[in-house]
Length: 606
Image 1 (tube, rainbow, N blue to C red):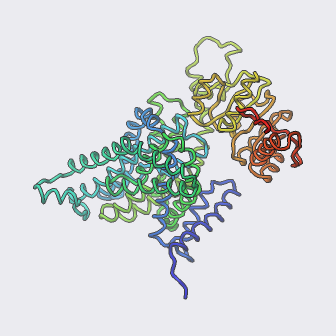
Image 2: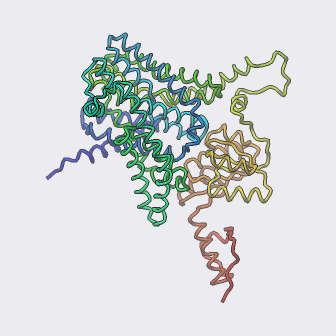
Image 3: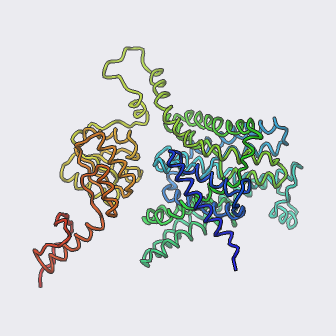
């Protein structure tokens, strides 16, 4: 007897089609998320064939948002958040106000009521958590200054939307628009104490609840959550540790939403942020990564399910106007705001590109507006179309910003130049000017070693290079490790070594050797390939976790590839041979070429 399993069919249908179309999009050199959105359209109710459960898909997608924000919190300390409050808070508020004004103007032009026009503008003003963070993570920008500003900006936007979700029903009931229900807590207080909170009381109550949640997390959560994870880690069970990570992320997010009215995403973010103070944060991020990626895919599929392709034919001009507000209006506003705070142009362009799209909060606001009778269904359709098209265009926006940056910085360099004729030594290319704008200068080293990554493996390599007097520099993308490297007096460049401009800063063409100490074999292959094309004689040493990765790295230009598991085994055999069979070689086919470092002398024979 067949069973009706909407949950299983939704997950299977969404992931399988997302994989097929994501792979196809990647083959066409497009972002895979374009394929995920197309998969959502195909399983949605507006196209023929299989239709996924429309109530389950958004809930599954919400889990992905929770896990994604939890992972960001693990890499984002309270100190980082406070360090960007001076620009993130006023910048986000100004950008929300500007975008809302543009959306309100379009709604008023179409004859919508004031409340519906404001809801429409608010929906266009807030960026998608998933899209923004995915773009920053792909470019290794989360832990940079521009990444911290973007994430801080996003947090302020989320807080503003949490406030808006509370105020919109109250404002609708007070203003007489729509058919908003009376807020339960306000009605209860009115009955008990004869109080009428009104809209001012609602704002105050929302702020108090958010403040209570933040205080609870910073006072008690920052002690309880790391302590709990340490206790779980001491059990030695990886299964329990992974389960504990998921329980904390989902549990805190759900509790924050139910008890304090804070969004699920914000609750998860603060849970990750307090856990970040523990040394287990890196392991927690790794354990949550697979599920985070899978549910993030379901988020894009759920967005695609809501889209009706017919609107592209029926109302193309309105869609263009909506896209203009999201992609052009918001981005230009963010660009000018960041520049007004005297931040580098590269930072301003990154922030503007990050915010040039809308997502999950926009869908919530649109649904609420329609439910309350404020926003016409036409407005919801425009918001959905604007979200999907802006998400598809977002990678292109990043690409254009990267291309525009040297041009604009060259203009700024020219306008700021002194009247006196510059010397030949003062001639600077646009690319170098862009680097100097962020206080980054190419290295003066030559015949040196380049070390990619300063984690557990890279730290040992770097310490040995320094003790031997070998000139070297490090390319790293973690702020914490960069601080450690600078304290040691080691020249360091922040960024992703896959980017050619980062390798150029390290004088790849003049280097003698390259040590790729990162565990990601895909990125290591790309780095090795670029290094070999620039400097054919350079020695490239890399690490791998399997024989297949060894073969692939050698195919892309690595001279020597060290497989961790094999070297661990050889080291153990060598150590055992010192005790039991002194002088007897081990049989592996590779020879005793592993350097074993230990602080203790070999045990004496009995």
